[in-house]
Amino acid sequence: MRELIQVLCSPISQCLLVFIFSAYLRYAKRNKKWAVRLIWTACIWLFLCSQYFFSTLLLLPLEHRFPSYSIQSESLNKATQIFVLAGYYRTKTPLPEHTKWPNASYQRITNTLFLHQHLDIPVIISGGNFLHDPELNYATAVAQFLVQRGVQPSALTLVKEGTNTLEEMTAVAPLLSGQTTLVISSATHIPRLALNFQRIAPHADVLFFPVEYLSNSVWEFTLNTPATTSIERVERAIYEYLALINTYFNN
Image (cartoon, rainbow, N blue to C red; front, side, top):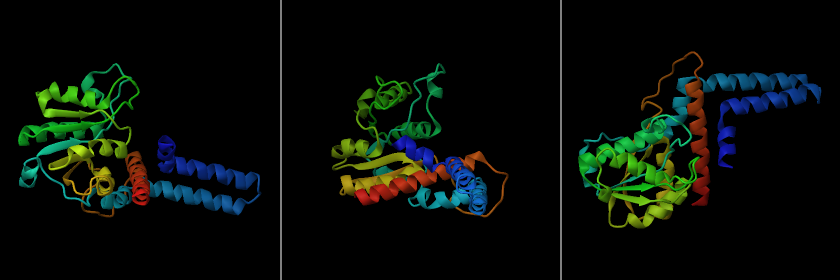
């Protein structure tokens, strides 16, 4: 179901569906006027999504609702532990280990490494067996990455559960009591985490450390040649808004 929703969040998929429906109207229903209108609407929508001013407009409320921090920020000194949420790890590739982490995951775990080194506090890693290789646990893969770069195994707590955000947070919630937890995840993901914390661990003391920003904090209107990167960002924004709505009503 999640994969289907992600496909439907893509502006390209949406336009293809509109084109198919337009063809149906044109040839089956003999309604050329509405078919042409729908095609023009789809083309305008796709062009709009290809513009950075539009994708940024959608991302701003998601990514900049919570403050951003530098690793040296004094505000982080009160944290007593770090919690890094799962991303992904490519198991089906002959490439070297360090290339198997997508950008979002790499930013999460490298910033976890830097923050652990700077603050000298323990790390909680969550993530179950959801990778292409069902035998490989995500949390274990992250732990190996950190240990290979000098982190002591005793500083790591592995919660090898969770195939989605809610399951991960539910499994980690008992470890948050009495701690000030620095939570690391992608900037678009943070508002959903905040909603889930209200439901699962309402009394937990947490600080959010957003990574992988896709937009600037200041919006400006500009026109650019159509960019697939902007279309991908719109897809990400639509998915997160739908996930937020789902989380809100589940709460």
